[in-house]
Length: 142
Image (cartoon, rainbow, N blue to C red; front, top):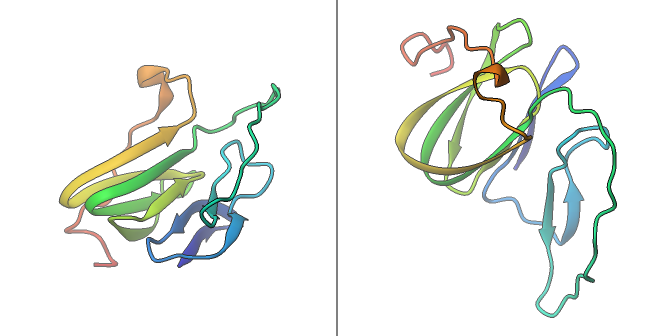
């Protein structure tokens, strides 16, 4: 239900499948990631005390993204830092993926609704490098 995609010792993605269930709180990311991803399951009546987060100076090396698949089906193609294809994953309604490093491309397989949470601020075209990747016709894993 939890999948980490690693390549040459680096985490490219972390996937939490819709069927994952566990009591309490579980963090899936290492403490040094600029985006932290956790799952929380609490019983009715649980109180989470009001709180404010202290300002913390941090350096963001990569704009990590989290995608929440609400409806449909999406193929996510993962690449290493050198733009070399590593693997593809199929994401469905309820799945969550943290794109931690390397590159990624997508093909919508069924009409899709998703929510993206990404590091900001967004810098427009300076935010990414676009490159040629695989297509569904060339995908070795389909």
